[in-house]
Image (tube, rainbow, N blue to C red; front, side):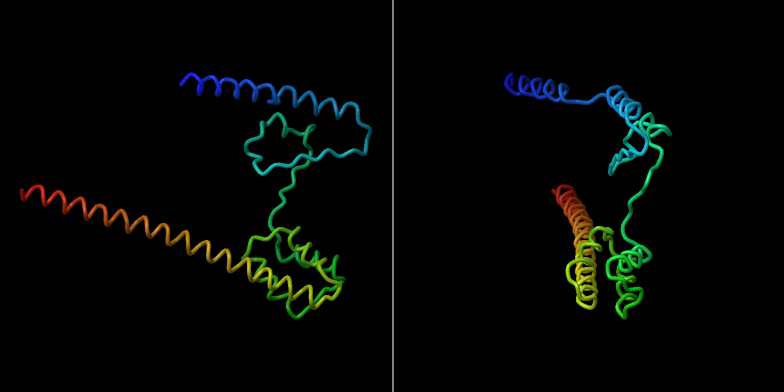
Length: 172
């Protein structure tokens, strides 16, 4: 027992030594802004903007907030134009449809568009990639749905069993 408590105290103390306070972070950012010349851009990234203190997000510290979402059909068109120098392709409609239904980042799409120099090969590989992602998504949904059904079925079986046990006790 003592060893566990002692270990937790030591771990907590070590964590606090490395923990950055909000005040220190604000001072650091303000210091960068005051010493930097014009033309510098500071980029902060997070997956959890809602957890960031509003003092960090206020104008003057963070003037622009960008949401980098999943790729959209219009985003795909821009990427295809930039990487492939192509505006139209027979498979673009299929790709755009899949992109609308599958969560894929622009970086993933861009990576696929740079794998080969031949446009037809690249477009076919991207289509295959998106179809595989759709299959994976559908399988994950099916598993999740089945887990929910199994849980519901298990609860119903348990309730039925409990009722039977209760009835058997009443009979005794």
